[in-house]
Image (cartoon, rainbow, N blue to C red):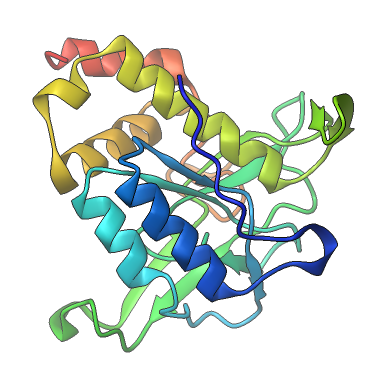
Length: 224
């Protein structure tokens, strides 16, 4: 796999939505296969902001799944863009497959949106979409060192990496394009999870815990 990195946040100083949106545009122009965003702005209200919808739909139409952290403020909170209806949002679990206390999730609602046909509104949906390892994750830090971190920001690249593995091990990229490729990848990833918590999608695990080997198996069984 090759990495294409765009700096959109400046350390503790943070950044703006405009910078993040510019990074998404750059990633699309670079023709990446998946976008991973371990970032977000806290949203307390159930109403989903439309800030990222157009950009994520552009990625979707280009065949690029957008994987985003759901946020670290606990139950009944989410982060944007992770709470966007078209993002593949990720919650965090520990080594015992328990949801981390900080991991976000809730029911979201879209009442008005310029990019969604009014006949589908209001749109009510749940986040996150799935969960992945996000507690005590050993990772690199600037300067060549290594440390352990907690956060949905650590769980998010697990899912983006799983999508890279799925594309590497199958013929999806060669056989499918555009929005059909994006939705196929997301359906395979979410459909192959290990279901934990409540049956179906819930606010803690989403549909369940990431299982990339099962996703690859499902894809190959379907001719990819």
